[in-house]
Image (cartoon, rainbow, N blue to C red; front, side, top):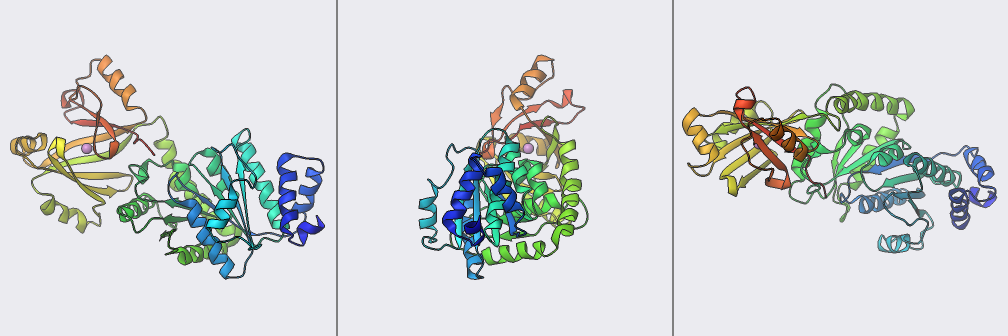
Length: 398
Ligand code: CO
């Protein structure tokens, strides 16, 4: 304990192993760490797989080292069977921290229940704090409930998103949106980053009051990372009171959403509007403050689409690329207008089977795969109060 308190890195590593393994003297050691009276700025970094969290964390570490602060990183990967220092040598070397005792990176793998993992991560944080680490970053891989729990250990939580992670920000777990104090839109040099940012802002725009800042970063070059660190420090300066206020805000904004649109609940995904020309139609919606987040042509449906996020849903403008297409025939027959509403369900195949089984008139003979890999089918207006209804499943994530 004496050596831990002096900041001896080898003693720190040993102490963490003792506490993690529950070895002899672990409880005593942990109690002494908790009684050390030292605390660090705790930063949680979480987000879906593939967002570039580790590289971003390494860049944040570099920023804090430039400020002269010592840093501990707890990398939690519930999917990894490994823990300890074994896999981290490469990362430390690649990030250029070899030989810098001011950086200590530790990995943890899942052991038992998610609550157990969160508790174990809290213990490791306490040991790092006792060893005088000024900043402790808890990085979690994945996007499940365990990650959300672990993120709650932090004073400030950064949720990292990136373009190309899946279909939409909207399909992210509400729990993850709820815990974000800062959003980092990483890979900001890649196509689609602006769309991610627009969607995050649209989702947050549902309620009133404080909203989490959105910072664009490019972890591979370090661009935007100084700004991200400043945003984190500003929030940390608000202390426990600020944190509580943010939690209440998050619960109100996203907790209530989760109740309404929880795992099993269906929700409005988008509203499809058939138009003669997207170029002519979008101006009105843009004047209302909506922005086009994505435009694409779906060849097999001979349609061009523009998506405009609107609160928790989107408008989809549809313009035919051929007269003899579904939208082309619709506009010819009825003129421009509401074409369909799309309802998102958790299991599109189950919905298809159930509706077909109970005699609902469907306008699709099977579940099809559309743009961005999302799966859908249509219900005929005859069975849906005169409105064409598209049923879409949760997007395949990867
Ligand atoms: Co649609």
